[in-house]
Amino acid sequence: MSGRNIPYKTYLEESELPECWYNVRADMQKKPAPLIDPATGAPCSAEALSHVFCDELVQQELDDKTPLFKIPKQIRDFYRMFRPSPLIRAYFLEEALGTPAKIYYKFEGNNTSGSHKLNSAVAQAYYAKAQGLKGVTTETGAGQWGTALSMACAFFGLDCRVFMVKCSYEQKPFRREVMRTYGASVTPSPSETTEVGRLINREHPGTTGSLGCAISEAVETAVSTPGYRYVLGSVLNQVLLHQSIIGLEARAAFKKIGVKPDVIIGCAGGGSNLGGLIAPFMGEKLRGEADYRIVAVEPASCPSFTRGKYAYDYCDTGRICPLAKMYTIGADFIPSPSHAGGLRFHGMSSTLSELYDQKLMEAVSVKQSDVFAAATQFARTEGILPAPESSHAIRAAIDEALRCRAEGREETILFGLTGTGYFDMTAYQAFNDGTMSDYIPTDDEIKASLAKLPAVGEKC
Image (cartoon, rainbow, N blue to C red; front, side, top):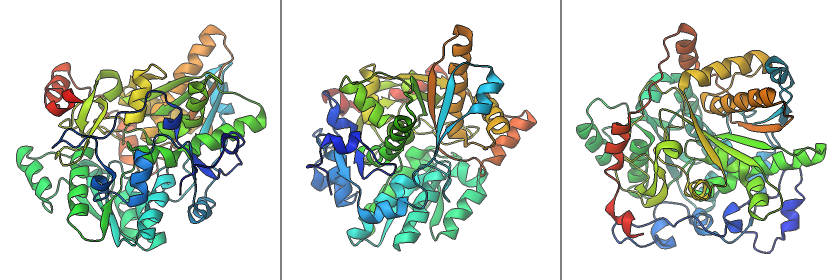
């Protein structure tokens, strides 16, 4: 299904609904480091990964040379239900800020799942169905990915088993019920239904869970259940590939109105939205065709870019997955349960980590209360209640717009609005009641977690 014979011209002259996904790794001179088998210290083979992931997705994961992948017709037809998504200028926010900057946002919340996650969920469900599988397993943090995957699996007639981070499972019952309505089973993680879940509960009694815990349980379930594979909503190269449709559409829309963004901002947890939004713009930058300031915004409570280490680490707390070289604060790190949104993975996409390490993009971290202050201002001016994840990007966009006001600069700012926050009202209530906390891990906490990085990474 790759686009090996598709010329760059097809990508450079996008239609409003792109026909191909764009693989930014093809334009990177220094490629992201490969996934490593922790037992051997050698790069993971396609055969080894095929026991965990769908066959076609393994090929997409490992391919760092093919720039374009043709989007299968059935996926593109599904996209037509909600794509192209709108590129909107935030006139009212600009006025409220008194800024000469022009602020645009790419809105990914105009689908039933409420977020950008559906872009990759439908692709992964399609390939699972095409392979003849019975179902898939996954994890979800705030619930956006689980919601999107349950919707995609219902469309293709697949069983969907979701392990949801325990604190989110308890804080967001309505998000959980949307998944169940689409036919998914939802288990709070860590659970007592898997060996790794029971182990984590013994080692961390009373834990509220993390994405690393939930990934371990989902992978164990997939590899031990015939006819199932594991799918992931962020971090992996294949996911960033599918999400490139966000940036391709944004780039096409800007070309249509004759505008070029100066600053591109995306929230960053594992990297799916950020990687998708910036992909074609980063491609231009890598090829020397244009330049942009690209800013990743992460929560101060889970700061892998801004306070992490670039090293090989496990992608899961149970240490049953391959090692990935990424900016990480350690697989043992469990964010505070007061953390209101997603963006709670301990590491960052290998592709984005390499781009960040090459100083092709910037990163900032923001406090939770500042994020919700920005979300509230955006809701009151632009009329959309944003997801907590998206609101990290809104915070940075507002800060950039205020900088432009102070400096008298008429820059054009683009940020990704990943979805809506209507299932996040517990967090909004805490902010409105003045009970929201700003937990930030200490240096000692991060140091203790990083001290457990796998030694095999030192050889790779």
